[in-house]
Amino acid sequence: MANAELVTGPFVHTRPGAFTRQRLRFGYGMLAPAILYMVVLVGVPFLWSLYLSLSDATVGNSVAQFVGLRNFAAVLADSTVRQALRNTIVFTVIAGIFKAVLGGLLAFLLMQDIRGKKVLRSLLVIPWTLPVAISALAWKWMFDPQFSAINYVATRLHLMSGWPNWLGEPGLAMASVIIVNVWRGFPFAAIVLLAGMSAVPLEILDSAKVDGANFFLRFHYIIVPMIAPILFVGLLFDTVFTLTDISIVFLLTQGGPMNTTEILPTRALEIGIEAGALGRGAAIALLLFPILLPVVYFLLRFLGRREAA
Amino acid sequence: MNTVHTLGPGLPVAQHATRQAHARAARRRLLVYLGLTPFVIIAVFPVFWMAITSFKTDADLVNPAVFPFWFHQPPTLEHFTYLFQHTYYGDWIFNTLTIAVLVSIITLLTAVPAGYALARVALPAAEKLGIGIFCAYLIPPILLFIPLSRIVALTHLIDTKWALVVIYPTFTIPFCTWLLSGFFKTIPAEIEEAAQVDGCGRLAAFVRTVVPVSWAGMLTAVIFAFTLSMQDFLYSLAFVSVSDQKPIPLGVATDLMRGDVYFWGSLMAGALLVGVPVAILYSFFLDQFITGITSAAIK
Image 1: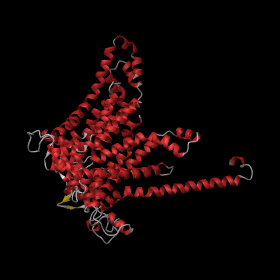
Image 2: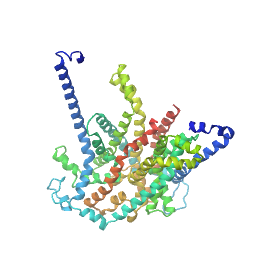
Image 3: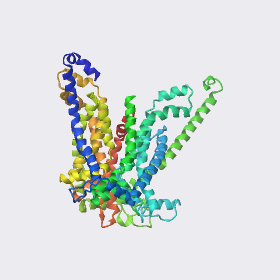
């Protein structure tokens, strides 16, 4: 841009305001369609959901009354919602830990100098690239109470005795939805980590080595600070995706058995769409907001700091 | 150290050392492959099982006496023909393609100019707007689907594929704007400046010089408009309940049961048919996806 200013330098001198004004008009004009689309279909609905959560709106009743925080009081008094809140946190945290560990291990293995890495990589990312609803169906079939492929393999290998009904038993059902989420997310974690690793310039590592820094020093002072930003963004994205993904639970267990896999998104769908209680549904979905807010806050602060630097 | 001795009797020693190093490297590679094997099996197995299931006869599928991971009766296409003759699968493909094309067009028309403005026009608020758009991608559908369900109901788009055509750009526009702005930053500024010096206006310079060299970026944006749309489940589930209006993933997930019974052969056939192309397409562009979402951190 500095170059453009230089080229049109004399012009700017004669009519400084006109040039800037014209440039700004052009720039905002180019942005307008995208911004407008987002304001109308993201900004407005978001504010509307705040309003809905404070009203008694239902699908049948278009004239909604303002009811203050009554919806929030009602949904928090609902033991299923409280359980959904707990399950959401358990699901996100446990799945996050497994994805980080497996993704880290896989990234470490893929960093090594081996042949056939491209082929291996393209096989390893399948879980992430498959549409999530399709994966959920494939896993539902693998967890089938009668023909479970997992049970078949595990019992033949003597890793397991008996024939558990994965999606039908409370503890196992939660384990199942976590397994599917981890299966889907670990390649993403690994690829993000690899992207982070490759962002570390080898020259810096080499010169540190020459200066006598051992592996741990290099790891601590060079690799970690350089890949931390990427890890951080990857983690935030994964958390948001996991917190708000409905398809795995919806297709695998519908929140059952006995609400042990009910999460806030499935509950919001049941109340807000299936039962038509828009106000309550919006209130349940907004319970996610206090959980999401720190995530987005850290992201913004983090991006702001980098911008300033 | 060995080089000192290479001319003398040390030569065999040096060879011995290299051989040892080679053996060590080979052992290490073997360990890496061994470590990768379970990951690959776990990643691929569900797809393998999906494929086997969709080509097996029903009798073969439910026979508990045989090894399930291979054919004991000849493979069959009956599940696929069933999909096209007795379900709305053909309509779902048509709907999916219609949605993909229209969402791509809307995304390109909005995200290309926006990405360019963010990358090139030196707006005072460009950084802030860019981050704002990035964050819009992080606003999850779950916070929006209830009010959006009212919007599509009030505009009579509910239960039609058009609802999804209108709604999907809410996540493809921010992602593709972000992606394209990164792409435009890599195009040399000289080409549009030359056009401007030659008397083109800014818009004409953009359309005539930048757009023609941006096909790669735009193709990437289109691929993502499609693959990200295919990852959606919530919006289609909440807005479209009429069978012949569904996109493939929703149709397969909600329409292929007869009564309460899952017919796994046709279900997996339907899943395989959409899953494999999307996964292949996406995996080609996965690196751009990762760059897209991490570029905020490494600019």
